[in-house]
Image (cartoon, rainbow, N blue to C red; front, side):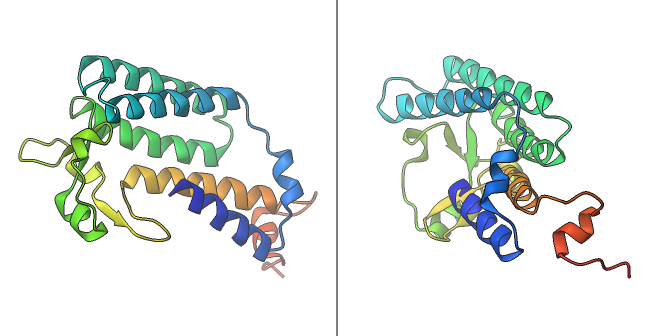
Length: 191
C-alpha cells in the first residue's frame, strides 16, 4: 500500500504543479533510523514465514525494538507535521500489536473480501481476530484491493496519509511570501 501511496502522492504533486526536484530538498533527519526499523521488521516477518521463529517473546522484543526506532525517527523530525502524522499511524499499529501479544489481528471478513485464504499465523506477525482480541478495530480489518490484494489497518492509512502529505507539500514548495493555501491551490483565494 505504501508504494501506491507514494506513487499517488507524486502524481497529485505533479498535477498541482509541483516539481520532483523539490523532493530532494526535504529535510529529514535520521533517515537511516527508519530504514533500519523496516529492515528489522522485514527480517522478523521472513523468519516467521520460513519457520525459523514463532510469534512469541522474541518476536515481541524485536517488534518493541523496531517501534522504538520508529519513535526515535519521529522525535528527531517532530517539527515536520507530516512525519508526526505518519508517526501517529505507527502508534496506532503499535497499540494493537502490543495489546495482542506481538501479533497484528487480522479480520476474517477482510481476508474473505480481499480474496485471501492464507493461514495468517504463518505469514508473519499476524493472528486472526477472535473473542479475546484487544483493540480489534485497529487491526488489519480493511480489505485493500487497489492494484494488489492486501489487508490494512487504520494505522496504515494514517501513516500513508502522512507520507503522501509530506511528498505533495514538498513538491509544491512555497515561494517566499506565499501562504500554505496559496501554495497548495496555486492562487491566492484571499483576494
